[in-house]
Image 1 (spheres, rainbow, N blue to C red):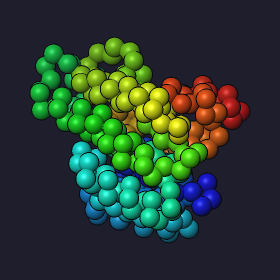
Image 2 (cartoon, helix red, strand yellow):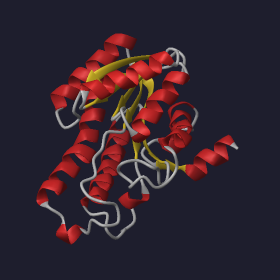
Image 3 (tube, one colour):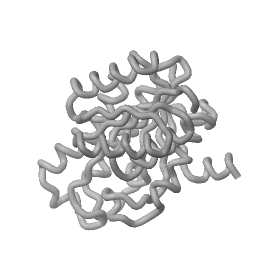
Image 4 (cartoon, rainbow, N blue to C red):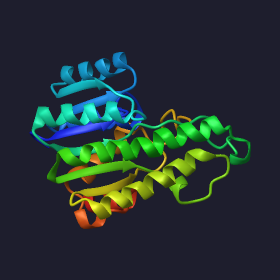
Amino acid sequence: MDDATAVVTGATRGIGRAVAEEFAAAGAHVVCCSREADDVSAVVEAIETDGGTATGIRADVRDEYDVERLMGTAARIGGEIDVVVACAGVYHGTPGETPIDGEAYSAYDDHLRTNARGVFATLREAAPHLAPEARALVPTGSVARDGTPGIGTYAVSKAAAEAIVRGFAADLDQTVGCVDPGQVATGLSGEHGRDPADVAPMFRWAAVDAPAEELDGTVVGLREWKTATR
């Protein structure tokens, strides 16, 4: 990923932070964003301490003007954007204990606003700045496709995000796809599952080596990654 410019939203925790660190270690200049400026600064400092290069920007994916500024800054740094990973997300509740029939409307609204509209804003504002061979990746999970008790409207928002990916894949020349790393131990999953650092290489593979025709508008998962890299 030498000389690549990569934008990672939600880069201060979980999969987002692990991906930002993985990309930087592979030689990319990573533009990191999160809603908390201090957290963004801490990630940039950690990347630079490890010998990588990064730029931190406070941005909220729920605000398209923040996202527009984020992508414009990234494009000025690298001329074009080579990779976008839309990791920003929220879960209002406890996984497995959030039945949809009892969920608050406010939770529904923020799930959709962050996890779906935020993905839409990220891809839409990135589109004018993408390099011809750029790739945009959106983390997903089986809850987007399979009815799972107690996941509530978080699952609805992930299904919407997958639909957004398919739409952009159909309309953009660049590759846009979903990456399903299985259950990962993050604040959104109840801290159960794989370490984010263990799945970050999967996102690097999707960003660089996965066949574009197999990724574009679809979901690649652990099986595809392990088959390709065994």
